[in-house]
Image 1 (cartoon, rainbow, N blue to C red):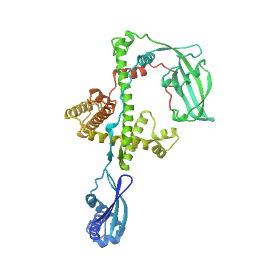
Image 2: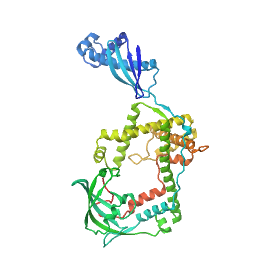
Image 3: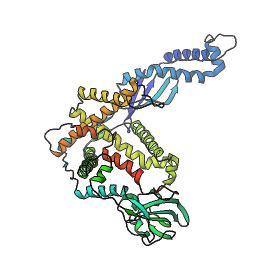
Image 4: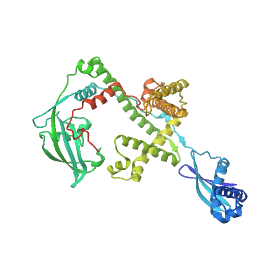
Length: 482
């Protein structure tokens, strides 16, 4: 067997292997027997027809095709051994260069290579901002409004009113927003109450129930709603109802009405603790993103294309799951973005997938260099927690789910991987921020759990937002629909 390896620019290697004619002839004989076993040949039992008969009936091309498959199945591993190539994924037959002698070309993805550079010289201060009293007050005020009572207002719209209306959007007389029921609190800073653009609700001040108004607005290219980017849109509003809010007193009775707090001070403390967790998580996400970018700037990272393709597939599946929760499918989403699948992948998904692969490989290399480990005690605890969690998930009939090793192993593996990555990131932070030692605290582990649980305050707000949100007319639920 003659072999030549040709390195490729995309971290793959092309292997050209020429096989002995006698060896290939033996595979042709085996191929013929295999064809004979499948086919009904008059006068012969299955698999007993002579080679010449199979050749005459099916042709040399069919035999060669089957023989090449058999040859690859048996000889591919030997080709890799001869070249000392360790693949990172399945190789592929790229070309049949010749049949006499038989010469095949394979494309083999190589294992990723990461050279970190002088990563210990990287400096990045770690200084999360504390939670301010104003943030706590704003949050509690929003919670207070969830419990407000609403009464019809026999007057023009004022700041603080709840207004239910129908909204349609046009660009050059073409509807780009079909008639949509919307509910807003006038003059609020909340993101939801600033849709479709900041300050929109103030445009309704002074209008009465039954009034209509045209409002024109030019959006920038970085507008949040994809439908409006770079467009001048004429919005037509039709006021359906105007209601005034009566807010409850912020006292112990209010806190107790939530069902989880004995007094108002306890509510404030719970809100503060939740804000501290959320703010730290938000800061950490940005910090680690910036830190990995600094690593990438001084590192050389090589990987084969299939890793990006796998990440793209994973990201698309995740996107489709998210869209399904919003009662959207992928094709509808693409139409809203005025794009097609190929363009969306190339412009949006592929760049993100490349960055994800690079980041993952950098983190893995740092873990190796810094000898990051997960203790056996941690692994045992994760497995036990996983078993208990899965046992408490009912099946379709409401009974306890039956567990199998594969299910437990998959969930536990993901949890262990998150913990391993979290400890690696903590180590990277320690090096960059000048910390002298690093501990994997319970808080770090909880924050790496992929938001598996919600806090009491989050649960309360979610429930009460649904239960006590100011009721609008029966035509809509008050949320802008896309």
